Length: 303
Image (cartoon, rainbow, N blue to C red):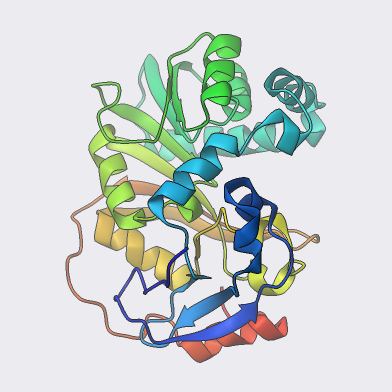
C-alpha cells in the first residue's frame, strides 16, 4: 500500500472522514498484514473528493481480483451463485426491476432498430445480462467483459454469448454498442475519467451508457465495516464529483437520480449520452471537504 494523493487535483492535503480499524477481508486476500496498516477514508481539502488512504498498488489490485470470487472466500461455486440469483422470483429480482426501467427509457433515448447490442462491462457471472436478454424489449445481442476468469467463463457458458476474461479496455470486440452498462464498477477503477472516455469510444454516437455507482452518502448510512466501504472501493462518489467526471469524459445525463434503501445502500444511477468532453479546469472545491467530513458523524449533508 502507498500514500494516496487526490485523483482529481493531485493534492496530498487531506482530512480524515472516518478511520477504519476493522479487519478488511479484501485486504486479507492480498496480504493479511495489510490489516495492520493504519487506514482511513479521507477527503481532499482542495476539491472534496473522497478516497481510501493509503491506497492499493496496481499489483495489489491485480492480486485482489484474482482471488475476489474464490470459492473459499465467497462460500459458493460460480454455478451455485448463478443459479441462486437467476432463480429468484421476478418480484424479488433487482435485475428484473432494472430491466423494466431500462425498457421505459429506451423509446425516448435510443433509435428504433430491429436488433441492438448490449455490452456489460464488469459482467460478473452474467446474472444481470441473463435477465436483460430475457426481458428487454426488442432483440439484443449480448457481450461482456469480466476480470475474474471463473466468472467470465461462467457468464459466457451459461448465456452462450461472447464474454472476455480480463480488465476492460477499449476495442476488445472491435465494434461499437447501442447500450453499455457499468453496474457497480466505477468505484473499483483507478482512473475513472480515462475509463469513461474509453467506454465513450465503444459506444455508438446515438447510444446510451448506463452507470450505477455507490454514492458517498453510504459512508454515513452504512455500518463502518460494511462491504461497500472496504478496499475494493477505491473512491467514494458525491454527486458533484460524479457530475464533474461525466462532463470531463464527454457525456451528459439524460436521466439521473440517487436511490437510497432502508438498509442504507445509496446509489447514483445515470443514463448518459455522448457530448463534447469538457476540458476546462473546475472551480475548487467541487464539494467542500467540510461537508464530506460530516459523513463521518453519520450525517447526510450531500446528494
